Image (cartoon, rainbow, N blue to C red):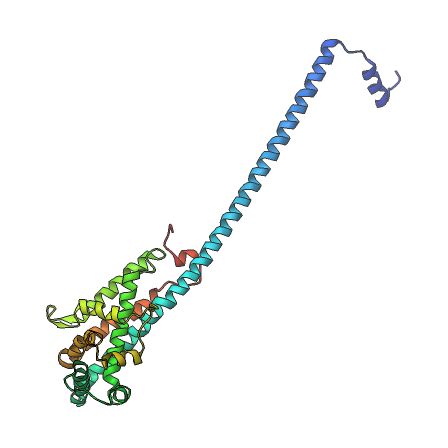
Length: 287
């Protein structure tokens, strides 16, 4: 029997007449196959588009998070410069001054140091004024006047932070802990059941008095002008601190206040939020 070629076989099959049912069945099979192919193609296109959409959505979210992080970093940087830098500086300066004052009060210099505060108090109270006060405040009396200045600057910085709470929304746990340190420091200035020391309301008054219209602190020269002013309202806030340094402060009180201030400096040095690093290291979880 002769072998038929493949083309001959195909020609034979094509030439075979199909019945109506067979033609309909072939058409149905072809339609179903086309439909299945279309469905498969559609599903592939759908899932591909969905995956692309998710990637694009994730990319947009990452861009938003990066932008938010950059803005928060800049905000933290600005807030640290405005609130934390001066607070740390004047806390450290006052702590060092109290150490120095405690040493002087516990030495043969005690009389001389108390004499400086007495001269300053007499001038501010107008009991005995000094015609050369401007020179004296920057020369012989600079220790006593600068002690008052550091004290007032600290109260101004502490009041500014407590009143504004600038980190409460960004880093609430840091804000709460710093407020606790500031409360402890404020209480350290008062002793003997509240009878002695720089009372809390006076601290508030000084903080308010020392705040300028621009929200900064008075300069040393501005303090000296207040102390030398003929306006009693400008001189009055400084009388209580002068009484404390002149009559009530002793080496033990100075050391006690200084220790609390040193703890505050340490807290600021180790726990202050940083303006760099990962988001989790900067901000509270969930913010």
